[in-house]
Image 1 (cartoon, chains in turn cyan, orange):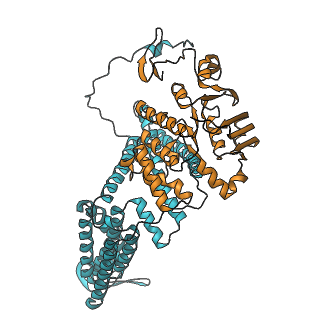
Image 2 (spheres, rainbow over the protein chains, first blue to last red):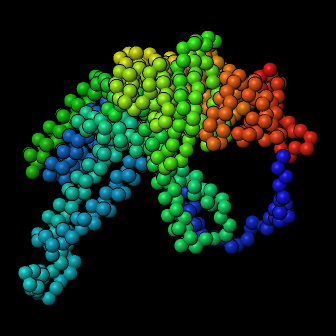
Image 3 (cartoon, chains in turn cyan, blue):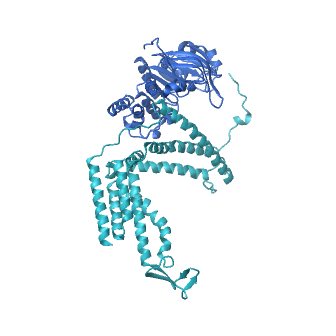
Length: 314
Length: 280
């Protein structure tokens, strides 16, 4: 038996723990925040999975049919020119979300918290007569007469135009409808089935398989990364500098890369072992049922009514 | 258990080096017959997993010859679709790293992957998969993504994904490591039953406590990648000098013939308790 010569310091105890109620608080480190983000991603995915497996209208539909009708409805959204109809269309999508057991707060947050901000920034300049001339709706500033600046003519006043507002509202409602439809599709369909649905719009199986694997191994690598960060945190005594933390993240990325590389080799071997020959084979998709036909008819009806109504209104 | 004289694997002077030049196996001569239960023993890095990959046609030997079912197993022979399908169907491999083996989006599809790749009819695929799910008690995981399961559950799904091909030979890389004692026992019983039904079982392990239950014959690999001993498990396990020489155990090692029970106990002069799990 090996008799280890354990150094004396290794046999000494660290003594009692100091009181934990001291006023000094440390800021959360980059590493800790990253761990939170990892678990946040996993929680979010878990939440989406729960909605996707709920018993609702959209969940019961064939994924391929859902993908095709979503594309059709997005086409409707970008074709509509009347803001009233666009608003109606958005409300209809909201109702679909409600009927698909999607919590409205989640849905509204994902769509209407993001869309107005981003599209708002894009559309903001066109509100003003300086960029796009039109009938004044609200006068903001009076200038002392017109000014010429090379090819530009600065008007006598800065106004928000009614054409600008109308355009902005239509634009935001359009983007909102498109985003709503995509969010509804992804929230009510499991990722695996959604990818399967893409095969109905002639996306090659190989491409879909690669996406599937990517999604599947994000978990393994995320778990690895999370373990690495936690191991690092458990060994960190006191605060570390930003430079030190950045170095750690750099090393972690490198380690993860080589892990992923080794893993991909193993996965390929495991596939070969079970008879994979390079051409992926899959079972046929789920069958198209009565509900799917009903949904196709309904989506077509909505398309005709909205596009027809749009012609009459504008 | 019935052991045929028919050799399933025959290796003559087989050696293998990884592309990096790292040696994994050298001068291996052995033969494994149909219906045998064989354990590959050796310390970490002795070449057990590499041998399993060679036997599964995932790696190919550059030195010596390897025959499977009487035919040379090489890159060329596996390029023949008919041979490749027949071989893949007959030899199943459960990897040590379940994460590498489970790449489908749910348990059902994972188990169905092999049968689908072999082009079996849809109804047949459904039947095979459902029966394997029932056999291993995986009903409640059917629609779950494999990567969200626990370690033990992943291992069971990995085994199921291979069993659905109904292989004649099962290659198992550390099949019971990291599993709780109850799951370990369940798996060992399953392997024993499958072996009784005529399947050949080849296990790479360093869990000496379970070797005699999983295997009848043991092959011992040294740290310099040679096959240094082969014989009945009882004989190999009682040869402590051999096990010490290949760095599998230290002088404190002993096995307990206590029957089917787990006990944790400490011996005089030992600092740590020894976990023992053995059949009478």
